[in-house]
Amino acid sequence: MLSADRLFAWRQKAQDRLKEMGGMPTRKHEAFRYFLPVLYPEPVLQRPEQPVSFSLFSECPYRVVFIDGFYSQEHSLLPKEILCLSIPEAMQSYGVFLQHRMQKLGKEEIDPFALWNGAFQGEGVLLYVHPECTIDEKIQIHCYSVSNQMAMPRIHLYVGRNSRLELIQTSNETVYCNAYFDATLDENSFCRFVQRQAGCEKSLFFQSVRATLKKESRFESLAFMQGAKASRSSYRVQLAEEKSEALLQGLSRLDGERQNHVHVLVEHAAIETRSRQHFKGILFDKALSSFEGKILVKAIAQKTEAYQLNANLPLGEETQVYSKPNLEIFADDVKASHGATIAQIAEEDLFYLRSRGLSREEAHRFLIRGFCRDLIDAAPFAGITQGFVDELA
Image (cartoon, rainbow, N blue to C red):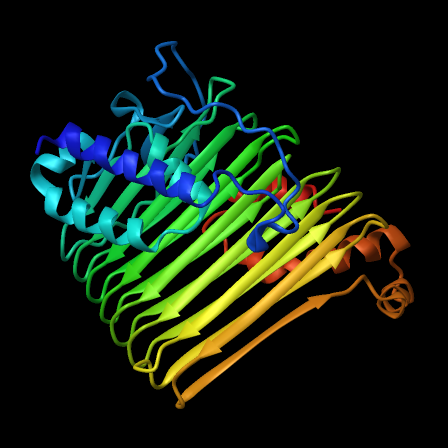
């Protein structure tokens, strides 16, 4: 079958699956009870032709650029250790791998935004990192929107054995974006995926992150989110082989009437696997957030260590915060915990700092920054959180 025919077939399967599930989500769906409904723009179906200009981080000498969901080779630059092919090109040489991934994801996928991307994906890419390669320089993935339609960027990443890399994903502020990131990590490999979403209050931003980890590999994800008219991140990570590890972290800062939602599933499917989830949210005004996280430990996954924490700091009288951590364990030799906190700044903490000479406003700002300092410090460089930190209080 020709590659174009395969791609069409995969798109059609995703579209059919989405229809079977009832189409785009409503609040009647359990996973979207707190998701305020919005009108979704039509997907971008053609590559944009107008010239574009944008600025990128100087700390990232390499880049992969999408314009309205279509890979732009003209604006992209990668080191020789990484092969970057459009999905149609990749099907010629890596068709077996891609077909396996898309069939696997197609059978397991239940997230409507991930299926929407699959049905209307622009020109996505395969990033193939050769074995035994350490990429010291950071690589920026920039999703740039120029139209008022929904962009559908898509990345399939393969990290070869004993290889390492770090990716930084960004977008412009006025954005309608439904992104999909799928990573396969071979033995003893490492990938760090950092996201910075800084959309305006009218934006729509959805992100699906999928990862499959082989023996002794490690996947890290760190997201800084400022919310939007509608913003949602969906994670599904499978620790498929022994001694693989995953660290998922996120910090959201929401004001006005922005909303942000996080949905996580980490599946422990092998012995001696480890995972940690740590998500925090700071809310002002009428902002809304929800977190639903699940740790699934299969019977084979003995000696698992899995931890999950969601902490929230609501600072407005009309903010709404919902949190639902969850454990499902079928093994008996497991160390696991989960928890959630929703608490405002304590008056006694403010009093203590004011007794040390700080004004009430200074003490308030000090405590807010202290709440999120561990995640801010985890950013690979200051530019990622510069505006984020400035707006914390």
